[in-house]
Image (cartoon, rainbow, N blue to C red; front, side, top):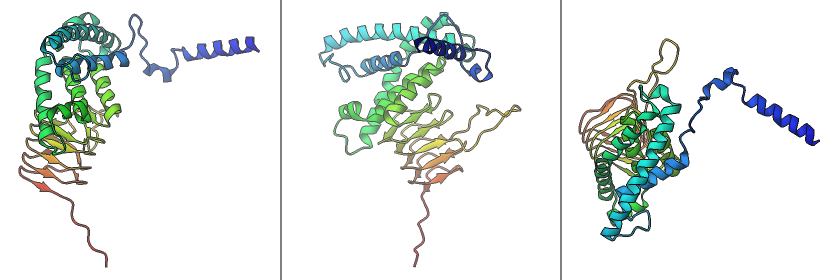
Length: 295
């Protein structure tokens, strides 16, 4: 029986590693480096959180000297780990790397490190916006520690900067970590301005080519999505702008769905459960039509 088991397992092994099967060709087969690692990307985000908000997510405390000591350590760890994971991403996803190779990983990691102060500044505007828009928040510290929307924005702003640097696949992996943890789905390609807030957050979807201005507030269940896809001559979806543009000072309430490359003018309010596929001018108020009474 044992001999039969060994033979069966060997046969299964042989079948699993067949590279000539058409269905298997979607799996990249490159030797020399491991794939980017999800657990290590979680560590990268955790280190980034420590850099942005010292003492909030670890035992480093609030003593200024201790924070400076730990900040130095965290920056070194972040740079080392990021360089490794960028190299892995460039190796396996070279077709998305615009000519960059894994030897460029150190340069890209250092370029990202130089962007950390600006990412922190943007995140602080997000914290302030969420505090200002939620009377249930007692302090900004509570927002940083407790609010899933801040966790999602930390992941997004880190991932977005990596995407701008041309790092393949890692940005998407990082935002999907936040999606799994918070229920907030923000594509790293979206462009989001300062003082951005999401109240509650569960079910929010922000597509790849969305452009969001400053001081925009979304509520749970909002979708900023594509209405349809343009296909190329081979029938494949083309990656062109297909998501909404949300101008400054817009509020979009719960479960509203805004689709297509349309513009929501500044200082507008989109009511809950609205389905919107056309542009609206500045200072608009879009609400559901009241249901008729049934006698």
